[in-house]
Length: 125
Image 1: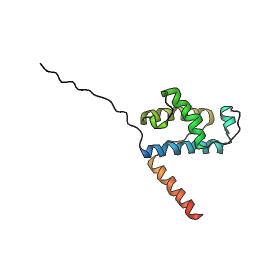
Image 2: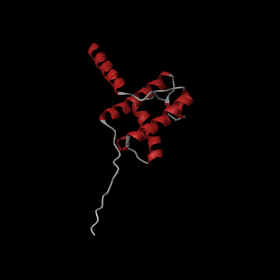
Image 3: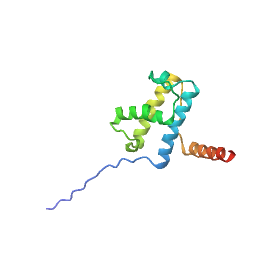
Image 4: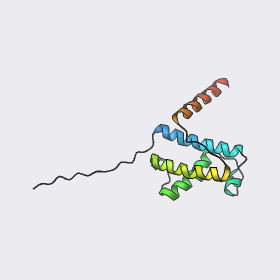
């Protein structure tokens, strides 16, 4: 009697290019909101440096710290869409409770609006 062995492997879907753009837009939106409220890095994290937030600081100091703690990974490229959602929920909950900031995760519509706004600003220069 011969047997057939079937191996089933679950493939975790990595984020798409649009999701990557949305993630980086989110970093920018969070930085803008914190800055608009006068919440510098020092005021927010009790850090030694008093500087305004940038999307890079949000990604490196906030997002990746939570990502490393939750999933043990360092690169955002290693995250699945479900992992991104869970990290976002942690950050969004904290910002809402501590600083009354709520940023919805960017959608395709908000990304299109943002890109069109940037193009318009560049044309006006």
